[in-house]
Structure formats: structure tokens, C-alpha cells
Amino acid sequence: MGSFSIWHWLIVLAVVLLLFGRGKIPELMGDVAKGIKNFKKGMGDDEVASADKSIDGKTVDHKSDEVR
Image (cartoon, rainbow, N blue to C red; front, side, top):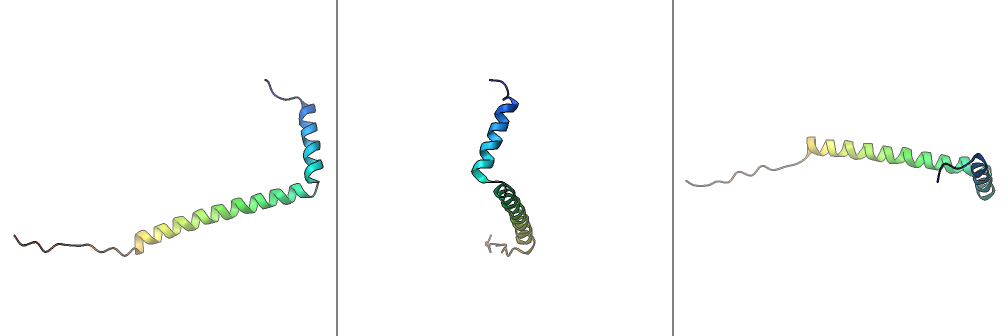
């Protein structure tokens, strides 16, 4: 169960190129990169929004008027 030989990887590469074509792989990788960039941007927006809520959050402190 060791590592695969160089011939195995060449055959896998040839099959991938046949299935997707030469122009499709860079386009697919570009889409993946855009997705990762948008994900990171969304995570950053969430952090900014949560920081704004903690600073600008509207909370009401309730003090009961207990009679002793």
C-alpha cells in the first residue's frame, strides 16, 4: 500500500485533462480562488459586525426598585 508510481500519476493526469480539457482547469481553479476570497471577506465582515454590536449594542440594565 505504498505510494503510487510516476506512471500512475501520469495516467491520472491524462484522464483529468481528457475529462476537463486544458482550458477548463485554470478556469476551475480561478473559481475556487474567488470562492475562498469571498469566504474570507465574509468571515471578516462577520467579525466587524460582531465587534460593532459589542460596542454599539443596545442593552438595558434593569435595576429593580425593591423596598426593604
